[in-house]
Amino acid sequence: MEKAKAQTQQKQKMSGAKLLLDCLHKQGVEIIFGYPGGSVLPLYDALYDETNIPNILTRHEQGAVHAAEGYAKATGKPGVVIVTSGPGATNAVTGIADAMGDSVPLVVITGQVTTPGIGKDAFQEADVLGITLPITKNNYQVRDIEELPKIIHEAFHIATTGRKGPVVIDLPKDMTVLEAYAECDNVVHLESYQPNTKPSKLQIDRLMNQLSKAKKPVVLIGGGVVAAEGHKELCQLIERYQVPVVSSLLGLGVVPNNHELFLGMGGMHGTYAANMAMMEADLLISIGCRFDDRLACDPEAFAKNAVIAHIDIDPVEIGKLIATDIPIVADAKIALQQMLETTVDQPDCSEWVALCQDRSQQHPSQYQDSDEKIKPQKVVEIVGELTKGDAFVVTDVGQHQMWVAQFYPFSFPKQLITSGGLGTMGYGIPAGIGAKFGKKNRSVVVFVGDGGFQMTNQELGILNIYDLDIKFILMNNHSLGMVRQWQERFFGERRSQSVLDVQPDFMKMAEAYGIQSVKITEPRRLDEQLEAAFAMKGSVLIEVVVDNREHVLPMIPAGKPNDQMLGVD
Image (cartoon, rainbow, N blue to C red; front, side):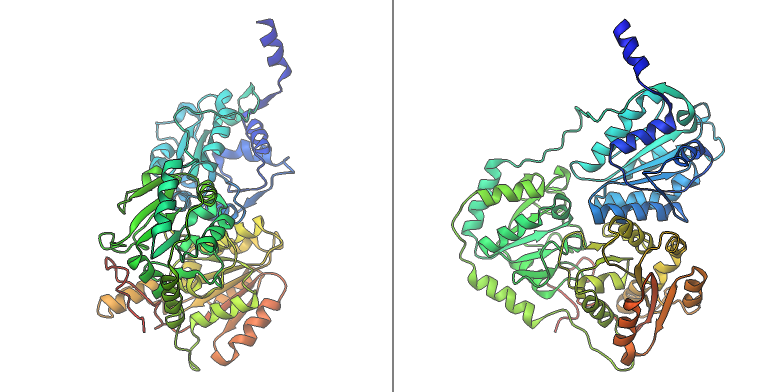
């Protein structure tokens, strides 16, 4: 008893706010994105003296979470967010849901009213646990200050292991001012949370034996390979067995675009070669890809003649959308390592590879250039050349997102930072800022449409404060482009609320934020003006007025099989 008392006295007594910061230090947190308010004032008061973990004051809580997502996607480290109670927490919900959809590791600390006021409709109270339960891996509400260290370490553990994702810690104000003898302990053991990372040897053997007999094998890769950092093993596998590879949107960059076995992105706006390969395969090996409806547009007709092998860290995803013959629950990198360690005969699929490569050459991503209007695809191509395919590329959501996926020359994993699962307009600008904080010495380019730009452009206010160098490509087609495209193709060209005829002067907006700007309207000057803009030091807003009748093609109509593509010559 006396020994325990002596150990307690040796511990430093500190407030909940300082205890939280101490725990963040021990988690290796480098940066916080946040916005203060009444319920987190004690926490921000503690941050006032903090020198090693800067808080980036975004201009909106949604921007804070998207910035943390961009940081997490670029670095692989968990993003950390602090927001206040009530509207602060509810403004963060879109970003939290986005992170859940794309398996992005986040720890979001939401302020809450004092413990006695919870459930009494206190000022700026919201049921954060109830609101975020469906869109987080886990959420907590701190009711005992001595539990705070344990909760923080559990939150980081859950966010960064298994299928990564967001965790919310709801922190009542009194928990930040109360003091306690407590210490941060990095040891975490949760009986109910033990994600499996190692595959079954029997299932790996089954898969490799099936590969050795395949005549038309295809590997499908998704964001799970990126998260597991299994790109090197993936390339070794496809090169050893000469298997064509297709990527989801979030898997782009795992295999360089110029790799001879890479067929491009599959799905609704994927390449002809990629979609036909999946539909005609006799063995489809999906690694870290969940077969969402933008990839497998008609699940009933998808890869009907193929043996389906699905490797995924999340057992819930296996068999959820596509019937699976060889299910393997495992971390993608570990599974790939075991596949490489299992030696089988080389499959005889040279004719299949030749067919897939011929389709890639005969039906590349293409567009009709013009001397009268700037084609958005050409903008992406030129930016790819100017950056030598080596920039971190961030997009908002819409047509420009798909053109970037089709025409930027991706060359490394984590390179594309975009909102895939939730498709969140307004994601691009703050995510690009977060990516730049994570990769300060790398080039970051943000592609954004005129619709998404007007949702979160206030985050441009951060740029000069931190001397950030980001090139923003504003694709202005005076439309909500993807909505307009669907209306023009499937709704008799009835453009209901999708045309943005009246817009602000984006050049004056850039001036108001103190950043350089260029407006490009002439097709003949596109190359030289883009080159000049990229040569400028510091952040630049580059508005390019593009053809507003251009459609993203190929396109698979919703619910149609992957081999029924519009716009394929």
